[in-house]
Image (cartoon, rainbow, N blue to C red; front, side, top):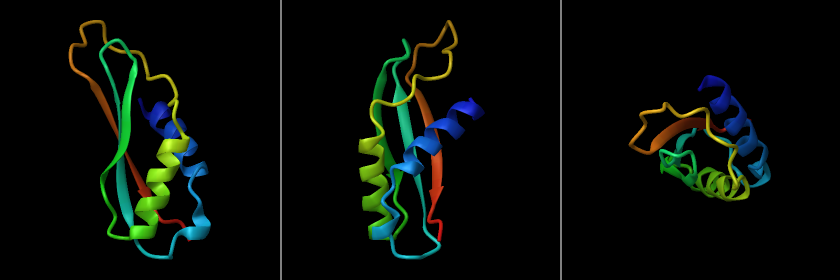
Length: 92
């Protein structure tokens, strides 16, 4: 799971338009959801940073990152959606 989070975070981070982000100590959480058979359901900012420009840039980056990478292998008895949280910080 850790490798998946690193790869998906890298993909999203590379799609952030850092030119529009004001420097701050902002942090936000994106959650990616897959249904039990591994099909992508949604990816969105679940915890906003309080820095509006960062939140907008992160939301845009998430949209540009769809389709998401395939999820890590699902357990054979999975019956609930898989939710994968990822934390992002302003990098200046």
